[in-house]
Amino acid sequence: MKGQLLLHLLFQVLGVFVFADIWKVKVEHEMKALVSSCVVLPCSFQYPGTRQPSARTRGIWHRKNKTNIYIYSENKTRIEDNFKGRTRLVGRPGEKNCSLEIDEVKKSDNGPFCFRVELQTSVKNKNFFVYDCVHINMIDKASHPELHSDQAVQEGRPAIFRCSVRHTCPSHQPNLTWNHNGHSMKTYKDIGHGNWEVESILTFTPTKDDKHSNITCTVSYHGVKNKFVARRPIFVKEQTVVYLNPVLFGLGAVFLAGGLCFFKSKRCKTTPASTAI
Image (cartoon, rainbow, N blue to C red; front, side, top):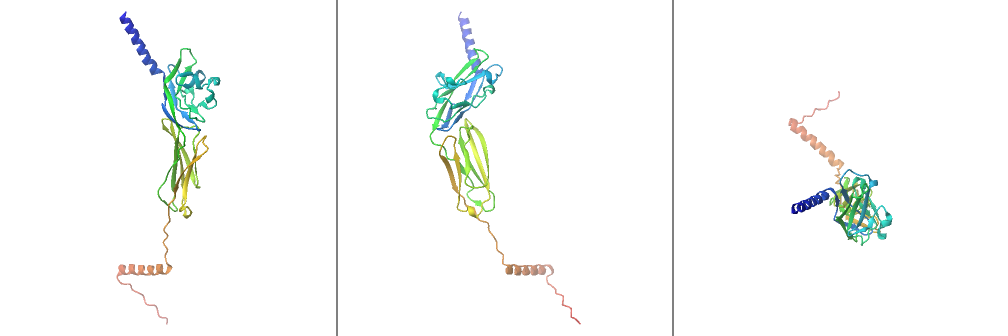
């Protein structure tokens, strides 16, 4: 009897480990979000069996310990009034992507929030991920951009200025603008752990008019009224122009020619002019 009981417990323990290894969700447990803007919570999951299409895969986000109160669901009547119209899945459940966007972030949107997946193929194929939840730390004030360039630039030579800012909402990228005409190019990069970076590179050829002026980079965030600026002065090194006096240049040429003649033959001979008869 004891042997059967131990065997039964062993199967239960093994079943838990196997089950846990098959049903998994991956989220960032700690995130940052800018109040009034938006945030995307990266999320991916896996389940046993063959992959199901999105139509048969139901993704739900809810508060921890409140599994019947949703912050996102396909059934909009089940969503909290506070979150209606502010949440949407940016990932496709059929591709095992459960990333969630929260727009118009409020200070009370700190969570923790958990993802739940339900496969519509069977009543038994349902699972809750209540131990892999996301807690959001609120940021009241947006960050100023970071501006990088050389300490001094050369007049007439191309100069490069870089401006970048980090954020947590790739579906609504911050916008970077410059106060100087030139060629600008933006790049967007996922730097991991729910953070992204947008960078703008400005290239132009400085002139005398740029001397003692400032270069500024301005960032505007989705949902935020204020704009934030990074500024630094432009130090322009003027080109050095060498002025040649025509008279001195002519004399120098004569002396140079004479010197070459002397070193070549040691003595320059002149041919007397012919006398007319």
